[in-house]
Image (cartoon, rainbow, N blue to C red; front, side):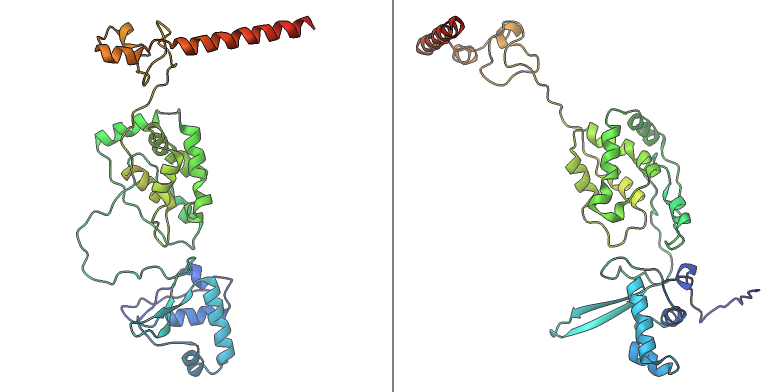
Length: 314
């Protein structure tokens, strides 16, 4: 079979091959989809009008075909309440299946292109999204703009890449994003590319819960490139490094006396450090033992010693 295509300047419709060859749809459903996509935005078309204009299919056949489109995600119906309190049904037709329960925002209209920043991938993150889209022709094609990163950003990423201490935990965190939201499914290669960014969060003192919330909160209704979205949020929302607290024993490492307050970072009491405290604070730092408490402790120790001796003799 040879296919001839005539170029058209106007009055034509663009239909993706993924929709025209969708085997979930019958040929009737595909024809109705092409017809609906050829109509202007705001056209009044439903099952009744389609059946009246195509008597050979019948209302039952049209209704079945439209149901196929709705089940596949090309045809979406939603009940809304207007300002007068009346409930009406809104319909929307898409050239790619919609997985959400409500339509995504409409595409912007045509017009003169504006000047703006198209955005790029975060510095140092490999573009693994385009390769995944090539494997699945049902997804819309994405042509990322590759802009060379400034030298300072590249050097900063090399520092992040050298941190391997938190890499295993960062990889597990990225793999679990799919369990929180199925739209954030990442391939193994994408996870490996994003591990340095997540590791930097962990190195700065952020918890796994904080990182997950920063990525999954307020997601758009449709996620076409989860790797780019995760990388962008991990880069933009990176918190400042937090102070790492050190834990010491509750006694001075030199004189072995207990601390009266918080344990200092040096692990030494004020006297061993050579600090001079006021008399009132010296009493609080090293309180004198209470004679009454000391006597009770001695009595308890004597009783325990006598008990052990009696048990040993038996």
